[in-house]
Length: 108
Ligand SMILES: [Zn+2]
Ligand SMILES: [Zn+2]
Image (cartoon, rainbow, N blue to C red; front, side, top):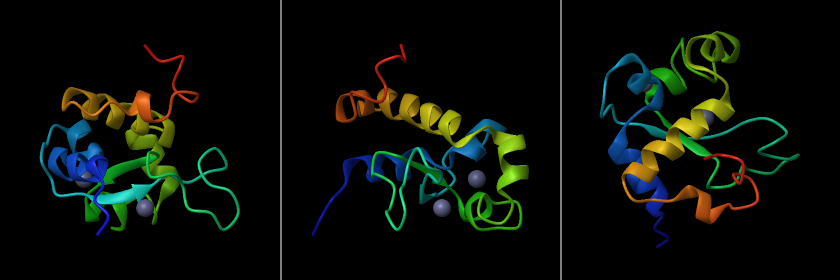
């Protein structure tokens, strides 16, 4: 059985879109970031390039997969949400920078 510490902590933190609205601890699903930066053809994004989104913000009518444009306008780009997620993970003792050093060197 594979366990993934990142996914565990993401589940514990809750949906990042809800957090932006001020609601903490909404049970999230793991969303793999989309876009050429994160996944190539037929390739799934890296497990580090994941954020937690509740079913509403993930697959619901206002969710990323139903309305990516509207979602981005409301909550920010995938990259911004990933940075936000990684900050929250860091506060819980999971250092995403260490797992992916070449990508995040510029962030302080
Ligand atoms: Zn949400
Ligand atoms: Zn998704």
